[in-house]
Structure formats: C-alpha cells, structure tokens
Amino acid sequence: MMRTPFARLAPAVTRVSTQWKGTLPPQSHAKNGWRNAALLGVASAGVAGLSFVSCDKPWKQTLGSPVDSNLLVPHDKDLKIIGLEELRSHNNMEDGLWVSYHGHVYEVTNFAKIHPGGPGRIQMAGGSDLQKYFDVYHVHPDVSKFLDRTCLLGRLTAADAKRSYEETIFANPYENEPARNLQQTIATAPRWANLMGKYLLESFRTPIPGFYVRNHFPVPNWEDVEEEYEFEVLTASGGKSFKLKDLRALPQITVEATMICGGAALYPRYLHRTDQRETWEKEEFPRNEINNFWGSHAVWTGVKCRDVLRTCGVDVDGIALGEKPLPAKYLRLTGHDADETGSNFGVTIPLEKAIDPFGDVILAMTMNGETLPADHGFPVRVLVPGFAGVRNCKWLAKMELVDDLHESHVDTHTDEVIYPPDMNFEDDLAKVSLTGGSVQRAGRWEAKQDNSIFRVMEMPVHSSVIVPELHQTLRGAQLTQVLAEGLEVRGIALGGGGHRVARVDVSIDGGKSFSPAELDDHGMEKVHKRNYHWSWYFWSKKVPLTPEMKKQLQNGHAVELKVASRAMTEHGNTQPSRDDAVSLYNLVGNICNYQTHTPITLQPK
Image (cartoon, rainbow, N blue to C red):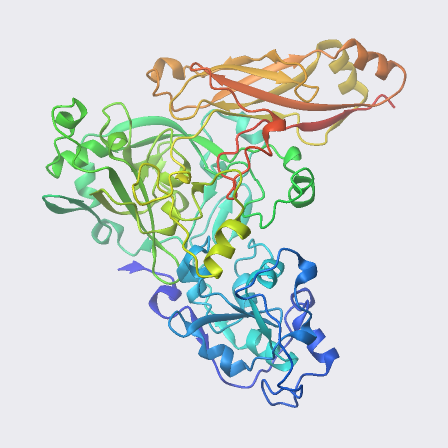
C-alpha cells in the first residue's frame, strides 16, 4: 500500500481539553500577548476569558478595518479579551476561522482563500495556535505584524495563551520522510536543498546529491511500488491507468535539460508593504548580495508524454500537423503528494507543449542514469523542458485534458504566478479578501480571470556569477595575479523557454561597462534544435582592472568591485539591469531575472 503521512490519515490537529502542563514555548515566541496580558493584570485566576474591565469600553480591532502602519495597531489594553473556549469554537469556515498567535486572536476566514500555502493549511489551524505549526514550518516568515494590521480581533489572557499553544497538537507529517544524501539542506518541512555554489561548475551535469530540491508537501512512497504505483490519464473518450511496467513497454527517450525554480531569485516574497522601495531590499532581503540561481542540470530518461497520450486515443500527430483541432487547452498534472489536509499538488501546462514532437515532454523514470530519487519524483515525474521547475510535476498521479485550470492553489492562486509591479500582497490581496472582496485567480487568456496576473510557465533569460564568491577579499599572491591577468569571473547562463544564449557580458564595476565572456555549451548546441535548447551554458572571463583601479591599489587603497553578468539570447532578449529590480517587483518574487552584483574587495595591505 502507499504510505501516507499521519496527517493525511487523521485530522492534522487534535485539540485537547486537559489542563496545560509543561514548559513554556521559546521566549522569542511570546512577544505581546502573554507577557503584556500579565502586566496589565487582566489574566484571571484560572477563569478563562474573564475580564474585569467595564463592558462599556469600546474595544478596538483591525478586523474589517485594516490599518496601514504598525503604529496604528491597537494596544493590548484596548483589545477585547477572548476566552479560550470561544477561540476553539471558531474552527471552521461556517462558524468562522479564528487562530491565536503570540497571545493575540485573529479572524482569518476570508484570508484562507488567498493563503499562499493553500486554504487547507489555514483551515486546519482553526481554533488553535499558529506557533505550533511554525515550529514545524520553520522557514515561514513572522506574520505577527501583518496579522495585527489586518485581522486582529482581540487577545487571550496570559494563562489562555499558554494553554492555546501547549494544547495545540500538530502531528508533523515530515517525520518519516526518506533518508537523503544532499549537499546542502535549507529547510526540512517541506524539504528545500542546494542553492547555487561553486560545486555547480565542477560538472556540467549536476550530481544528484547537489541537484536542487524544492518540495511543496511530504514525499509519498509505496511499500511495493511495482504493484501499487499507478497514474491515470483522462481524455474525452475515457480514462486509462498505467503502471511502471506499462511505461517500460513504450519507447524510451533521453533528454538533456536544465531545471530552474520559478522563484530562483531569492526575492522578498510576499512583501506586505512596499512603500519604501528604495530601502526595502536592503532591510528585508539583501538581494544585491545573493547570486540568484536555484537550478541544476541532468540527463533524464523516460517515455514521451505524447506517446502516452497516443495510447489513450489522442491523435497527437494530427493535432501537431494542424489536421485536427486541439481537444483541450491544457494538460492538467496532479501529483501523489498532498498537504496535511489531503489536497494534492497540481499544475497545468499548455497541451501544445505536451504534444509537440520537439517539445521533449517526457515521463521520466531515471536521472543521470540512476533511478529517480524520492526527492525528485520517484517513480515517475513529468519533465517539461524550458518551463519553470514547478511545472515538472513529481510523483505523477493523473494527467487530464481539460479547458480549466487546476484547482490546486499552486497552479493559479498566490504561489506560482506573477503579479503586476503595482500590486502588493497586503493591500491588493489580503485587505481585499479580509474585507469581503473577491480576489481573482491568475488566468491569462481566461475570460473570467484577471489577465494581468499570469502563471509562471517558460523561464526567461538568466545568468549568475558563481566565481568569485560573495564578499571575497583578494590580497597577496591572488591580488598579484589579478593585476597581471585580470579578475577571473565564471558562471552559468540559461536562455529560458528553449532559447539559445547568444552572449554573456561581464562587468566588474556594477554594470557601468561590460565585456563579452567565453561561452561553453558542452556540445549541447549540436544536440538541441533551435528554439528547443534546454541546457544551460557555462561561461568565463578574465576582466582586466581599469587604470583607475590599478592606481588606487598602487596608492595603498582597497578597491571595491561589483561583479555582474548579463545574458542575451539569439532573439535579443536581454537580462534586465540591477537598477530594474524595483520596477520588476512582483509580490511573489517569481522570475525576477535581473542582474545581481557580487561585491568583492581587492586589498593591497
């Protein structure tokens, strides 16, 4: 049988009514509620929610009337005290979803519709304390100020705040995940691993331990994968199920392809406010000091998706030749992986891509000549070359020919989509939703959708500086070599969407001047067809110092360099400048492909 995380077999949260016993949560978790409640003397002697303040007092809240500044958030003394049992009674969409966090109580019923992690994860927290979930999802940002500004309803007493935390039980669905051999683990729930580093340049094909991992949910597994694993294909004429032996009976194909995450730029995702655009990056996320690449390259072997569709009665050749109309807009992909509430991962890709004879969409079963590892979709993942990593559905469970977008929040809501630069999460999504308004799903060519919000599909042109590394200081023999030969700069470039890279330019003065680098495609331009080039390029350049830089060093002064790269495709698409970062802002941080600056120091002393 397929093994599932405990949270999928039973409710993810169990609320118990026994008296709290145990230790306090970490001190950093108790910002306002517990300590302030005690100082104000409002904690009752064991009577939950009892307040001795006059009922005539006009309690304040931000629910229904969100505020723009933390300074406008009501003080604890002006908040209504809410009893623990009342909090727990609001644990569903019908009665309202309330949660506690740092001693405050929030009403998040409408927010569930736009929660970036999906509505189910908010619903499972109804009536309980968020900190228990953040103890597992440790990469989740601190949202206390955001919640205070937008949906603050009241507060708990100090005693009830303790109980709410300690009596919220969350069964960690990631405890029994498979053993791994990863070069660098970033997060464990869900598993994220392997940001860029010098190791990427050691091999054109990324070794599996160093291949990037970006899971959304717990990794599924099977006791007897040969017998128990299957996926389903649904077409207008019916459905058909496939086991591994059925895939192996079809012709196999090998595809070289680079995969890159749609959010490769480690941007300040879900920025709540963007009033200070000139300073927020430095304060929120030092993007100018991060080489923004989250990708890897491998050789994949499996069965062409169009061959699988052909066995299901789809005339893929007639459609590709234009002799038959497209039977649907999309190929909807669903994975066996699911969140704690049982909502499966799901995305869509254009059906044209899936049936394109040169599109190389395959159902992959091996990677670099080895069986797919669990983190990369064992036993079957869909490889969609040229598209964002999220479209390469792992642990394939279902393929459907449809005209509608996937119901999964991953596909169309706030996760893998691109918003206009004049929108921010708090003002244009959260406030609208929390005050009862409707937030449109991402569409693009969908009559009932917001066509200014579109989904991440093909990736744009991109390059990253890998050598030198951030904040290196070169002195002594290294500096002597730089003076004689120039600064060696090396990195990676990707045309995106199947486009070839025509040139990569390199700068050591923050983009004021550039010179072309030498490209190394490792023979891939002979392998890939034009407009179907799925592989990355390595590039290198020794950039000479300017006379001004040399003079400054001779005078005994350090020189600060800002190393940047700029890629251009055969089609003339060019990577945006570092100065374009602010104008390219989108609230999820996807495909922000502008140039980054790697600061290094030349030190003569």
